[in-house]
Image (cartoon, rainbow, N blue to C red; front, side, top):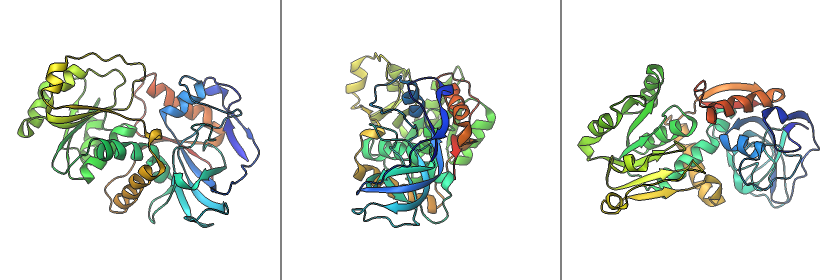
Length: 333
């Protein structure tokens, strides 16, 4: 099969487009003919060797995929040949990734693609959708009518947090760096879209959420968050969700935190069990068919240009170039 792989950690240009043996399907696995793979920041970190993650070389990166089942293992019960499927959590813990024509995936990490959902949307919403759902509902216990704040409402995770919170009946305040992006946030359902570069941003957030007495759920996407500032914007019994910034060293005064019954919730999507992720996937499928979310797609590359796709993602994650709105997709089949 054709795939993009590395033989050792390195920069995007270390990705090789070439042939590797077809995967052998185990009893509990499904063989998927991959149509689309999506790139996430963690894919670039693992490829570069910048985070501790067990990897077997040659290594094919990629967490997300969408495609069609072409074979199943003898113990597989949820899928049949010909089923359209999507999934995430590949490329982790010695699992080979999805930037390949074929992927052998454990049955527990796959979900049926509902009618009307394209493979592009399925792949683009996979990791970001499950991440957002876990953080909002399993961890923060978001309820209808509550107020959510999310930095970067047109980002991969930010746009999904915005849309899933609205799907659950919440009110959403978000930020973006241009008028066009703020308008896009409003089109995605945000109640308030503010300029994150504004010198009066905190006052604007306070004014927007004054009717509620502050923010119920703060979703932090920044890698070096100012938690002291965040605490001052929260409603009593509010929840602060963090899911980025591995090297960040946070400092804040404890009094305003615990006397307001606040919670600081950290999580990594790949720690969630297959059952937890499947519950998220079920909601994502249902809400998509109801027209309540749609992923933003910012760029598409063929598999042979996988290195360029990784470079674009890296420039916008680590380089903060702000040239990308939405997910980077690699089209394969």
